[in-house]
Length: 157
Image (cartoon, rainbow, N blue to C red):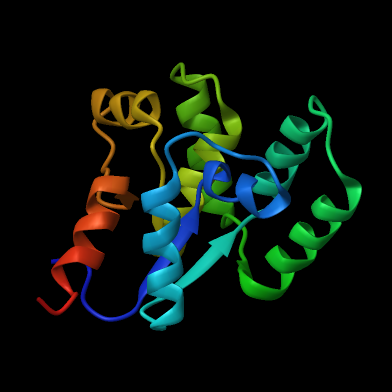
């Protein structure tokens, strides 16, 4: 199974938004699972500059508290590991975009996970369906259901 050892998880922007004060519906269980994995040091979490760009784009459309955003951005820099796609990853994202998927940031996150040996935690079913339809591997995708099953399976009864 692909979960042996310490998990290396690239977070989709959905999971970063709460850090900067943006509530996302339906994330409570997943965030609790992420906190548990972090507290028990069973996972290392990653982000990219593309996450920050996407998060800022969403925040810019909201009435936000600058102090909460600043504290959240600082926490992201301190608590998560910064990563980037490889050159191969950039090219993979461009090729997948050419094949018809419109969200380049999601493709960059996926390609980063694939080329850096990370798991991309995402709830983006459209991305997953597109990748499968293109014959792309989704082994690097970690769903919320899989995340929750990892934390449930490893808890003592």
